[in-house]
Image: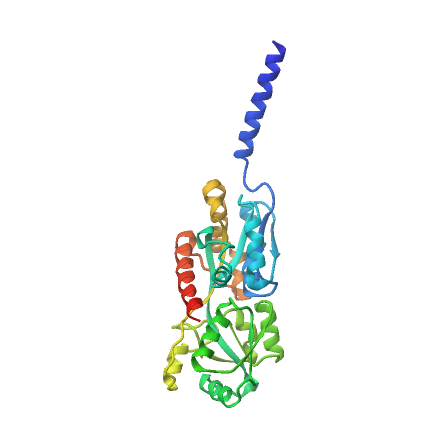
Length: 324
């Protein structure tokens, strides 16, 4: 009888012990955010803008890890190799993720990422140093055509939206410009400020730190560009100066995501993650003040709109990759 009672107790505690694990409060440990670029760039700033405010909602520490290299590929692979349990979140940006997938389709599918929010939409702009003497895009085109191979362009990565669209622009105009690669937006911006290169292109918000050294040549998007009042749409300017070419538009879409399996296998955890990001982005006054002060975007689109927009961008830039 005692043996039976002992067996019942073991089964009882084993059963309810496992149940308690299933229904334990999430998170029980720190949340890890993987940034697939180095420190100082727009993606890193997006992740860190929320880092010290999210613990208010999660009740646990949030750590940010930078895994840079190969145009974001190393960080993406690191994220995809992590357990899909909600404890690892990716901060990255489109269309760079499209470029990684385009170059190596085996890494992931578009549907593998469930976008929590696209926080910072940054129109891409192309800028030149003031010491070039150029006042507009027409001056740049004439100078480059008169001196093939002389002028340089700092690139933050082959999949970064500014460099992608700029390469299309240079190709359509037949411009011979030396592309100088750097590892991430932060290092590219520093090189531009230091005068190592004549031009660069980036999201408008990320480029603001280089504004004092810059003349904006154009924007790869219609409408006003925050922080760059004189920026005009590239295609409008090309038409104005008599160049019969047209280039695609785009920007940097910085987002936070989990693997799709989190929503499928841990729906309650998924909801808590979404709510934590939503409350912090929309309602945390300290975060709002910090984001505005550091000029980091703080839009809240939410999962439905963000996933729809992400897939639209992915499709458009896949077409650009195929054509150029």
